Image 1 (cartoon, rainbow, N blue to C red):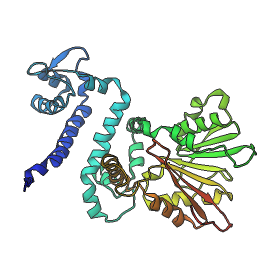
Image 2 (image 1 turned 30 degrees about the vertical axis):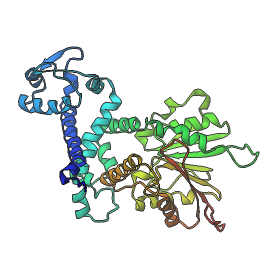
Image 3 (image 1 turned 90 degrees about the horizontal axis):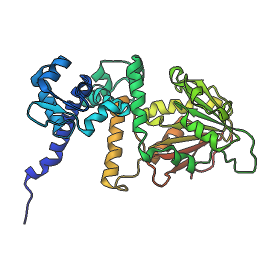
Image 4 (image 1 turned 135 degrees about the vertical axis):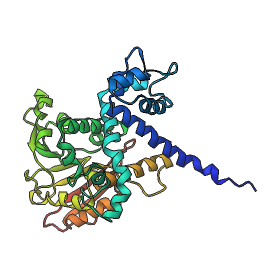
Amino acid sequence: MFVLSPLMYRRPFLTLMEQQLLLLSLQYIYRHQIAENVPLEDTITFDELAQVTKLNSKDLTRFLRVAISRHVFQEPKKGVIGHTAASKLLCKNPMLKAWLLNIAEEFWPAFTRTVDATEKWPGSEEPNETGYSLAHGTRDNPFNEIRKDHHRHQQFITAMRFSHLHPDYNISYLLNHYKFGDTGSDDKSTRTVVDIGGSNGEVAIEIASRYSHVSCIVQDLPDTIAGLQSQVPLALKGRVTGMAHDFLTPQPVHGADIYLLRWILHDWSDAYCVKILQNLIPALKQGARIVVNDISIPEPGQLGIKAERDLRYMDISMKAFNNARERDVEAWESLFTEADSRFRFLGVSMPPGARMSIIEAEWMGDKTPLPTC
């Protein structure tokens, strides 16, 4: 019988280590602005580049040769470095550059301290008791910590927008699948949608464009919402408005038809998600809908191994960053149940081709909730 040697099983683990070492090289390249100091259409020696960047030539050469082995830069002759198509993107594409910063300087250090955090704060759901907290030496939550530095904050926002450019995350899946203007009757009276944590208003603008009887209020923190009106087309002025609001405080807009949370709850632990939902309750009218657009993890084995692995990576990334998590259907339902028994959980649907699900609940108020779907 043919028996595989234990050495055959090293490869997956070696690959993981190789990826970490490449990231180490990219962190060095980003932090010291290496790409910007290599001529776009010419070459430069390692020694010359070391002088320009004020770095040790031997260290620089070793870090760059790791990147060169993956076609980030090239060494056309010994001791000389030039750009490749990949390395040029680090100069020419600010979104990619911001994303690399986010991975190398924000997330990766957090990953390396996450096991330490679970030992220091076992089972914690607090956003300041994480691998990120230990790696960055902060007792603030990551969002507040990043916000302290304007450039760092802007880079973080840009990185998030770059991540969301993936076709599977396109807002068309939400807009084509969920009818924000549908009242279930011929009634076309004005409906109000509150986009909580709605950033630059991209989703709200699309909703208002599709439904002439829908008005949207975009809520986010003051510095995020400040530029909203410059993004709103003239034809939608008055129907798409902005409001400064922290969703960890009570909801100020009472009586809206739909409260939308897109890419929000996966950033927070269960305890904080329950608080976010409870903050809505005083504002809710009977029949109001809570629409969550976020990842919903299928049962183990329902996806191909690559797709499931990606979701598991995302889940543990959220743990490292903010003690947050990705959730399955049962976990989504539990959030609403724990927040208040008057929420009627309507279920989870996944538009074909999308990576994000639509999770919906209805506020029943004093009316006895019907059985969930």
